[in-house]
Length: 114
Image 1 (cartoon, helix red, strand yellow):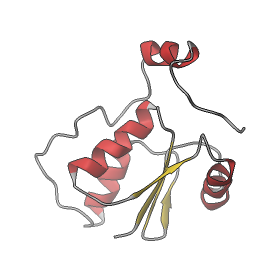
Image 2 (cartoon, rainbow, N blue to C red):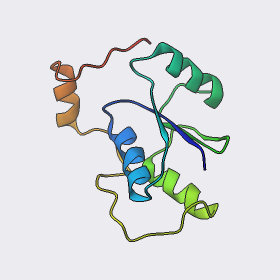
Image 3 (cartoon, rainbow, N blue to C red):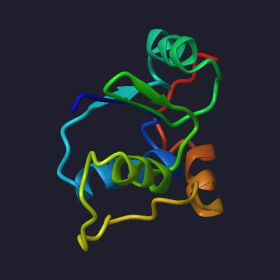
Image 4 (cartoon, rainbow, N blue to C red):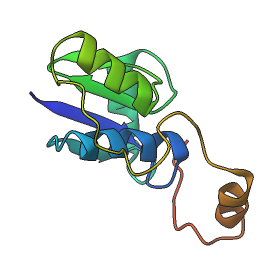
């Protein structure tokens, strides 16, 4: 299975996608859409919209999805078998207000090209 995940370095939704990849021990390409204008443009061109995360699995684009939605897609399409393994972080939510505040205070080194 070939997986390309268009993710932000620090984002609850993106961390949820990473957690699902880890839960199922899947190899994937983690594509930074914040620090690379080219990566962001590629995601928008492929998904037809500007929101993230987007995950491409064997050529099928899942646009603006949570880790939970990626997991559901993979199970329904028999790409992974259900497991009792823990995801390690929430897979169904964005950043908390506290995390957003840390980013606003400059503790995040993200560069945004939008």
